[in-house]
Amino acid sequence: MYLRRDLIQPRVYQEVIYVRCKEKNCLVVLPTGLGKTLIAMLIADYRLSKYSGKILMLAPTKPLAVQHAESFRKLFNLPADKINVLTGELSPKERAEIWEKSVVITATPQTIENDVLTGRISLEDVVLLVLDEAHRAVGNYAYVFIAKEYLNTARNPLVLGLTASPGSDEGRIREIIENLGIEHVEVRTENSPDVKPYVQRVAFEWVKVELPSIYKEVRSLLREMLKESLKPLAQFGLVSSYSPDISKREVLQAGSKINAEVAKGNYEIGRLRMYQAKAVKLQHAIELLETQGLTALQAYLKKLREDKRTKSSRELMDDPRMRKIIYILVQAKELGIDHPKMEKLKELVKEQLSKKPNSKIIVFTNYRDTGKKIVEELRGMGISAERFIGQASRSNDKGMSQKQQKEVLERFSRGEFSVLAATSVGEEGLDVPEVDLVVFYEPVPSAIRSIQRRGRTGRHRSGRVVILMAKGTRDEAYYWSSRRKEKGMFEAIRKIARELEAEMKEREDMKRGKITSLDAFLKPKKKQAEEKTEGIEGAEKLSGEKVEKPEKAEPSKEKIYEKLQIKPIFVRKPREIVVYVDSRELRSGVPKHLRELGARLR
Image 1 (tube, rainbow, N blue to C red):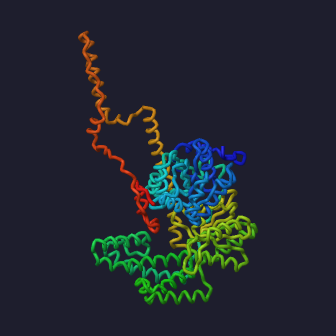
Image 2: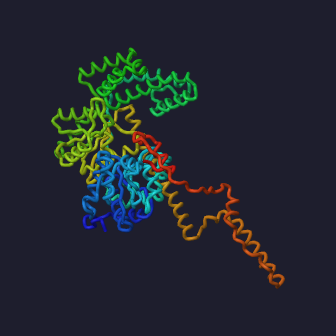
Image 3: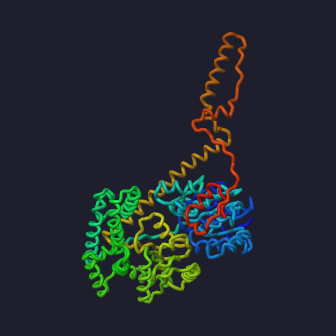
């Protein structure tokens, strides 16, 4: 036993999920804050006790990988040097040495993908692969390659996917299931009978604000410009209409259609690229105005004005209507007018801190600039606030290192400041205990992100979620979109879970001999043989003489294969092929594809 049972008291649903998933590749869909990591530890303990070997737990961000390692160190009876974190900050040589001596490894997927591709590590001895935030296992994300490689190479493989939200699209969920080799799905919601007693009450509020007339004037000019840019695209059938309310996705898809036509040699369509680029930029400008405010829009227009290389940017900034918009924005700044959401946010924070001075508050926003503005405004009121952003740097805005992210979260947990203004990097998995208030500065059209944001409160005690919305804008559309998608998500995952259950039952029946793999093929022949035997027995009864039964001949494999519609192909396994890859190619899909074809990479 590796898990220190004296320190934990697993809940009934955790024990049930553990029993069902300790021998099958499982996807566990469980609301945030209800102990998915403990389920992973229960299964890890069982797998290590049964097979020994290694446990590999992947998480999409470095702070999350570090957090998981700390949880294992706290609850696993292993020396500290046997539980380690692998990230890109360590040199390849260090990572290979740490991998060899470790029993439990938590890591970022890109790091493991690179080390597997270059042959520095092997997944052969890994007895459990845990993928946290498993909804990311789509497309070219590193989880996909690692899971396939693991299932192909490990001696005793078992996959455990953990997520609070697998996505609203049934096709996407099926892709996750296929990519991870999932055989069974365990789904729980806040209303599941075995989970309900442990769910903290979260109060939801939707606060609507009215946009001032100055906003409406700017929006009207931007929508007029957008309509003009969409018109040529609609005339060529690249978009369904030139309404300014057209979806962002449709405009982006128009760009892909243009590129495809140009690739075929239809260069006349190529001139529409500029209109499509203008439409994308204008849509973004309208979204910033409606959801973030005049300051955010002004910062974006400044970037467009400085972008001298792009014709679409130059044309937009030369438009007389854009000059008028900039004049209005300058006036608004002088008058101190900004988005009414900012004032409402300040009210909410002030009210929460007056009721409970040591409150912890998280404000989520899609944009770094807005996060910066929120911190400035709150500090101006004498309220302690910090930003929490990703590692990438943007022009004059330097990203946060893993060490800085960890320090900020620790200080927030200790109550050294009251408000954390976080971008999407704070949405996934980070365990910040006892958050009293979560504010969405804008709704998000994604079911996954909406669930992740909400999950930052109500983890250990009751909490409150406030969603700020500007009336009659994209805010309202995004909110209803995420609600609809969330409902569809649980319907889709339950349907897929039932299908997997039926498939597993069929496999079990085959193992027990109730169904054989050739039953379907041989069934008609068996029936004919039975009828023939019945006929002989009937003749014996009538004549009273023994009739000789024909000898039962077993069909040969060759004859069976001849009858099959698709003939099996038998190929001799080739000798190992070694391909030398330039390390700069690791980011492309080529090394992964070569690996899947069976080549060894160096």
